[in-house]
Image (cartoon, rainbow, N blue to C red; front, side, top):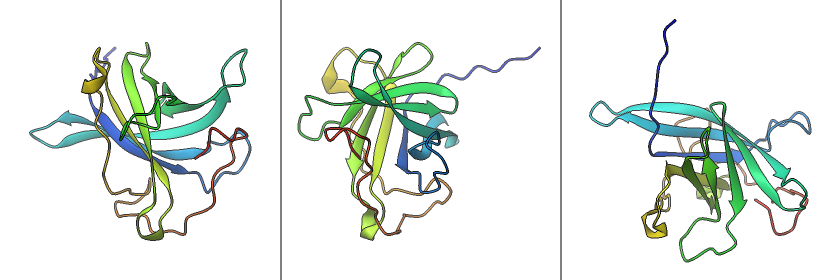
Length: 163
């Protein structure tokens, strides 16, 4: 038996509203995350992302539950957002060993709104956290900016928690 081990470090990506949602169980958002594997060769690992809204156990608090290439992650509304800090923050990895952050972004040239996400190793000092993402969005299946008509806000059932 052969196994392959990958060490994932910094990653970034984008999630969009799932406009092809066929059922209530289908993901609310879809997208991708890319992890740099070899800087000299510009090799990246691109993983698909699916996102659902869930409730915390024994609570009405909602959060985004993500599957990133089959690895679980969670994003919670950042209650103490500071300046350009993330709108959402949470954990990623089998043992929640990495930090994930998300920023709400407006679509470019009338394109769809999206959430830009960054994944990084956990740090003890918050000032070393992942920087704000300023990349141009691309759709999950295309490599050019999205210019589709922006829909209204997605209703997650909680006025304080919306996209």
